[in-house]
Length: 191
Image 1 (tube, helix red, strand yellow):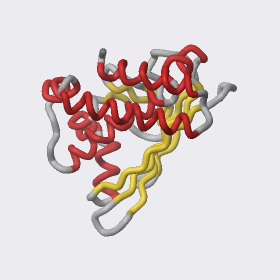
Image 2: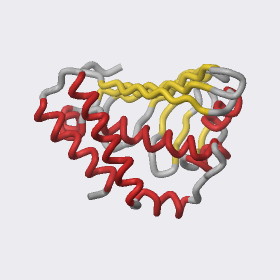
Image 3: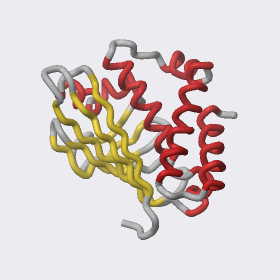
Image 4: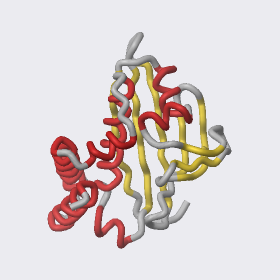
């Protein structure tokens, strides 16, 4: 693992579905393509994966239906990046998903975007997962159109502001929080 200051974003969501269904939504190539992105590769522990037009990496740990850990490389910036999904039953048809994304970004990336960049991206991703689990999967064209809608702009802004507040609560410099929050929101809104 590279040395340096690591950023970790942690998201926790509860979904109205059983653990096996949620696990399938996270690990089935067919289902990933319906709510996230098409994926290719060996989807098993030790295998490599590539999401179409996005991240790729190695599956480090795959313990169905409770834990999935993988490297996450988008190719925008070099550095260490690892994502862990933990699923815990919360009743007969409810499951808690905990997602932790730990990264050691380059100093330039950290200075420009801070940890909010990962946080906003995962907020948008988990929103698509929630819609999929509720039966409202969007086509790629519908998803692209939604990304530029007024609703999406509001979601992105609120998410960016919330991650900025979390960054501030971690003790980050006020000016750094303001600039990284603004840059992250602009990036996702494509301003």
